[in-house]
Length: 582
Image (cartoon, rainbow, N blue to C red; front, side):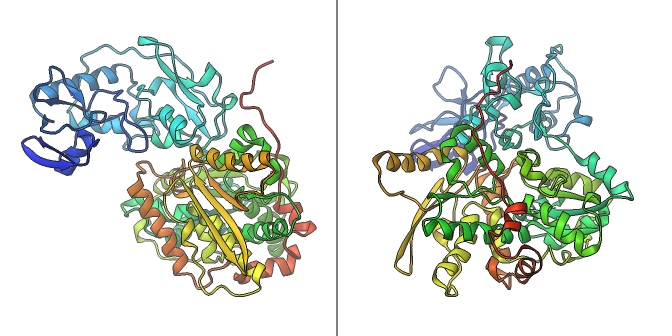
């Protein structure tokens, strides 16, 4: 432990604790801009400078560890002037476009400028003239608004291990851009959107598709339907003054009907459908029909990563589509037929916590399995919250409503898809039942829960060992894959039978399209909401969902049938990390 004083207040902290964190323990907030708890501090912005008695210079609180007997001053007139000057310098390279910015009203630079009372600018504007990069279907990069804090590059490199963003140039010409200075879509980018989720300003943001939805809702020939992902229900409330993790499923259904959708479905239903296909696929492979381990494929950012960086695992990937795509396929076949609407008139909108879901719509020709685009548009949680507000919907005073039948009822297992370990737990609830032929006495598989980067477990299923692994954030997956590769090279049995991967920390609850400001505290609250939604469900296993049983009886036949493969499955292939020009 280290003892020190901050503004005259004694505090004792574990060795290695930074001044920034120690100050928080005594109720002092040191201003910061580049710092984010998800990444190693690097002191890029200089706003968090503080004074340490005996030091000839100011130090950066985010990157300076506490020392025994240290006496720290975090706020005085000189520090105020220095921080204000640093802000002015940053603002001299930043456009005054707050009114049209995606982060207007929720911008960390804007907030600091207000706190420091900046009304006039002491330095002349020197803006770059670089164009906006709109090359990906998921996110856009506006380099003019970049403040060179480095968060996006740190997240892309440290958390995700993708290295799509890098510092280019030196000195005054330094900027952050895709590695090799190519377009983002030609880089290793996996469209996870964590760069946009961590950017403190509006330099990186989701590609907005709200206009397409407004146009479709106004088109009398379109039959607009919508689905909501598990993680959306425990995060959207943050945009309306609720605490993180508040379950707002019923209000979401009501809000979507107020926006004009003719039918409101729940992606949890198609998550149950995914489990029926994936669970049976796992059972087949455990019997020797197909390579092990089976790897889950619901996360499109992970799918993109695998095809680029780990294509040797293509045969191991579950061919089951993600719940989003399954929902689109059954909505334009099974549902369209049941209500007598032509599938070409069904306009399917997905509300997702993820920017990579926008990319997934066109990933392969399998995403047009109905003869039409299975899902027409994806809106992120952030986009939907703006759409609700602009429509004048009083979200907090909405009644609780139910989803539309045949594609809306879900088991608790379906809602688990929103958290890391959730797909695995949901799959095990059904797979173990299928393997043993017995009803589970306890449906929780707690070994796969939590925010640990990699979780491993071995289950005894009627005397048969089933080894599983769960990884989240892309930087963690390679250690799992390398264990499998090492066993292959030695001719040994696979260390795992089943692997789940989610690209974002915490799973979809921490997706790139969720409300800004996610920390592990926020993620934990969202995760708790997901588990609460599961616990309160009457039916908690996918195979027990009556509407799932009905869709197989009336339409699909049985899991892994020819019709199921036609609409609910996909394929993968190796893709180049960089798309090089001819």
